[in-house]
Amino acid sequence: MGVGDQKKQLILDAVLRVIAAEGVDGVTHRSVGAEAGVSHGVVSYHFPTRDELVLRSFEHHLGQVEDYDAIVKWDHTDRMTKSRIVDNLCAAVSLDMAGAATTRVEQELILYASRRPEIAVVFRDWEQKVIEALADSLQRARCRHPRLTAAILLSLSRGFLLESLTDPSLTEADFRRRANAVLGID
Image: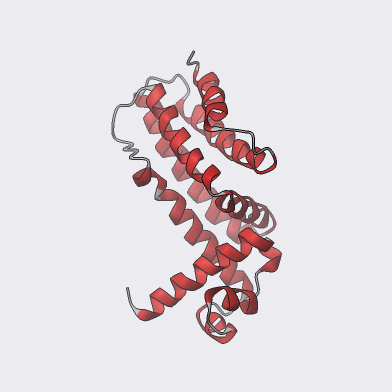
């Protein structure tokens, strides 16, 4: 990774921290530069517009979320049981619950994408990749409606994480009970 790429990475990480703290409305070249420890001119050089900053940070965030598969050791080519799928979902949800900033960033970016069609496309493409990967695992676990169930589980995960921002008493066990109910696990 070259120096320019490292600088971009530093800036994109700073954008996500600004979004977590202040929402998308807090993203300016100046606020990101201050967070990254660089001048706002450096931020503007790499990302000429605010929209470019937010779009690239969204793509960066989605790339980090994709890394969850490796973190929770989810191999979508394995034949998993429904219980193992729930275990992996719980592990991913726990990671987000441990760092509420990730959930705040994702929710902010989803709302922003709802107002920006070019960013909504990036999100929908990523979401479809997640649903397809989860549906493959569910199909191997002999789930009756794997794609629909995958979409429901993704919505459950996102909704649960949003709920956890306002209800700190929620735990991984609460999510597990809900996911088990969706998959018909007693």
